[in-house]
Image (cartoon, rainbow, N blue to C red; front, side, top):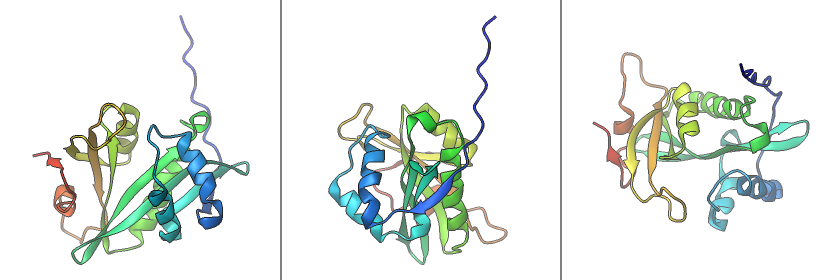
Length: 186
């Protein structure tokens, strides 16, 4: 009978701001983490984000992951778009990604005007779907042809409602109605 490998223990993580002086480190991390290459425009935007929403995860002084989120206006409310969240392969399944996501969600929860957090996930990325599902995100729609240079090109829109007024349960799709080209789930 084959032994089942135990999951290694979670890593201790320290957070650090992403800014102009270390944006090259984010670029390198992203190039080793994602199947897509981000344009210079993406990296130009990161230093303008609130520090609460652009953080590195450090383990033993080494940047092993990062999260970047952008606030978007939605009427008199806001939503938080998770632009990227990634962890170097050797550090995955050690709690780093969850700590990055929890950090981002905790900071979003302190801003009552933020009513939803959302992101795009490639339709073939079962690990990401499981990861976000465990964190309370739901697939609210699909965008066909979202990715231009990878297969499959489609993505799911995942969302989580936060800071809902007491006694209400807003539908994430309603909070994201201005996101373009989405085939909404019924």
